[in-house]
Image 1 (cartoon, rainbow, N blue to C red):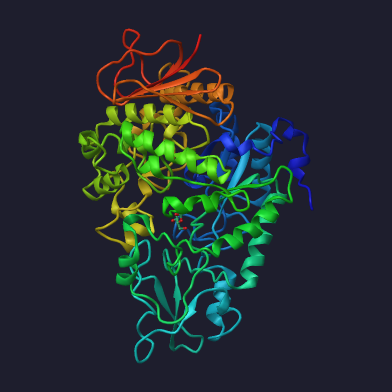
Image 2 (image 1 turned 30 degrees about the vertical axis):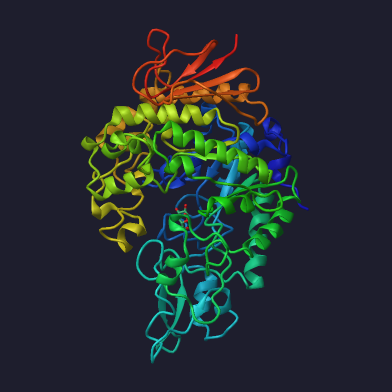
Length: 575
Ligand code: GLC
């Protein structure tokens, strides 16, 4: 096995070699093109990230997860990869990558990168080769090509929709100029799906995992981990057939869907696990798998990827009953699988939680009738106006929810900008500036995800609020100013200082992975205890409530006469 320059470097002396470092890590997601721009071209880059390592260190995160930074035409924000073992020249070079990894490691921060194995981009050399090669060729076999239906193959092989809207099949023109076969793409047409029955595809991803592991990458986030293997033999079922067999929005429970969550996918991850374990400490992985909750543990097994996202809190209302149920269930599932749980409220695919919690629908919701995730999408569709959001309430709830989440056993995944309490950008992004394929492919149904991907404000004014010396590739509204790092740094009570304080304490307070619920006698209030006498109390209601015995070490909003106000979380230690 090769050792890595980064692993061996003395700058790594701060880095944990504990093989379990990931189990309770606070992981900060960077969307590289929107984080920091060092050369003024309007696109965030790797050098920009390197320059902000001191910021990340002060924030107190254990690891950074980098969304795709590979060469890409950005048909889907980089999740359309042209070359898995290189850096997009628009955002840097491999040398820049090594420099960034070294700087992060030197600051004691681990590095997780995104792997996109379900599909490449249509510019990937293998796909270009497939287009130039005849039907039935080895080059076509790396992807999913089928003859069309109808007299002349003019109809797609099935009526399936792609996730971003429109058909899941695209017809090609054969090298001789005639209308030809169709290829499958679960996402945009620029993202052709790989054929994971093909040994070359399997081998190539092992090479990619080793390539980045050898460069010192500590772990991987696996994109759409539940879609890789497919059964497309014989006559394909119609989308109506599939809907009829699905358990509502929870999907299939028996692995019989032609492409989502098939059992054979775990054979791939068992092979990957062997590669991860060639390294010391073993490389980690977390699955993005939107599967039925009962099937999630398979992805998180120690023989597989080791950890899986659960998006349950992200989809829940700000509601004590939902929170308690979700937490209890996920901790039990994680314990049964041998993994630790994951928690997340915001990422590059959803409306930021400081906005979701302040939407009119969410503000009025009682008893958990409404999924905050859906409310966010609807708000965007309805025009996404800031004035319709109760920004203050949204932020207050977001701070309370996050402080609760940071006290839970398991890994906390944070999305860039949430530590600033940043709001989603809605209608301030004109249609002409939108980038997300979901907007273009699903007009009138989905506005897309650009609003959470707007470049971060570092300064209260100046060009692109300190993001870079040029513009920003998505427009930043004027109100970004008050969320800037500069406006919050060192300011007591700011969201940034709250995250810093909580992340620092979390390191000190976190011991084993158990949690004990304590009864509060008030349905609006949840209270749990972690080992070492560490208590977390969240008041989901509106009026102030008395706190239990103990010293308050941090609270998400100021206490009122020693009481915990509504929409507030406090951490206490037993005295
Ligand atoms: C994942 C990513 C999302 C991307 C999709 C297709 O869901 O999080 O951003 O569009 O996969 O790769």
